Each structure stands twice: as structure tokens, then as C-alpha cells.
Length: 267
Image (cartoon, rainbow, N blue to C red; front, side):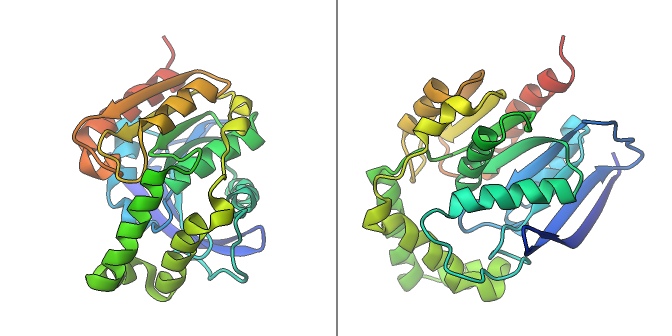
């Protein structure tokens, strides 16, 4: 399959965002046809998805939109401190981005913080997403999450972690890291939870998590399954940590492809 790969800038909700568009050559999009929309994690960006979006486009035949959230990668810097309610505000930014890019039937593929944002979007605009694929989402704060962040802070000061992150985040590097760690370690954030919002998620959900996830436990997966308002399929992946699409790509690609194919080509 030949894929047309374009990267460009758009303005959504007053923010300049970098977008990568993957379009199977010759694909004629029909009204309300599905588009994969990838949402990265708290230290992520377009580049950190590596080749996974293209692999999912090839396996499903669907076009994809991958973007750098505001303050990450090639997008503009945050104009103001993001605040503890940053996810709620990013929902509005995502909604405008989809409108600007004429995506009418998004199939959201989110990892970690991006998965949380995907679920929040589906709860806020339940009529819009075709489905949500969630990898390692957080619905609430666990001690394991905080322990993982404390470990990351230690590595930031004692290893080349900062230099490696700078390769993808550039001038955003220090702000991206501090925004992540300071938000989640803030005592005012300790009781944060979106569980009460999940019954408003009416679209189908595929929720994946690594059994060895260093930032969360199976309670996150169980909570998604128990609380979303629509159908939910879950998978706990053995011998896998926080990044299933990288650590067990073949297995995750097959799981997502099967889920998506059943949605767009029902029996």
C-alpha cells in the first residue's frame, strides 16, 4: 500500500499545532468515513509514535491524523501555565482540530495521557467518535503512578534522560517534563478522577494495558470496563510495560486491527 504522508501546521482553538496526515493513495473518503486520530502521552509527540500509525493505516486501510498537542514537538509553546484542568481544556482544542481538518468520524487512538484525553473527549462529545482505543489510560491517580513519576524525576537528574527527550521535544523539553511531573505530584491533583464521567462514553472502547505497567495497575483497566456507558473490550498484555504499541507491537497491532475491522466491516 502506498501512503501519502504530509506534515503541516493548522490553527485550532487559537493554537498552532503540527499535524501529520497519512492517506492511503487513491482512497476516496466518503461522508462520515472513519479517520484514525492519534493522541500522544505526557512526554510524547508525533515522532515518538515512530512507525506505528503507518502500520495501523496499512492494516486497516483507514487514513490517519497524528498531531502534536500544544506545547509538544512541533506545535507552539504553551502561552500560559497549563493548570490542573489541562485535560478539560485540551478536549476543546481537539474538537476544534477535528473540525478544522474535516474529520467527522474520528476513531481515537490514545496512549497514556492521550488515552485519558480520548476517553474524556468521548464523554464530552458522545455523538462524535466512532470508537476509542485506549492504551494505558489513567482514570484516577494511584500510588504506583506517583512512584513511577518519582523514578522518572530521579532519572532526569542522574542519566541522559533529558538529552534523549530533547531530540523530539527541542525547546519544549524542560517545560514538558516539569508540566507532567508538577501536575501529577501536586497535592491538589491527588484526588483527581474522571470515573464519574465515563458513563457518558457511549461509543465502543478497546482498552489495553501492560501487565507490568510502571505507571498504573489493572485497576485502571477494570475501572474503564466497569464505568463506560458503551461496550468495552479489554486486554491485559503479559510481559509488557507502559507502552504496549512499542513493546508488543505485533500483538497490539493485531488487537487494534481486529477491533477496527469489526467496526467498519460488521458481519
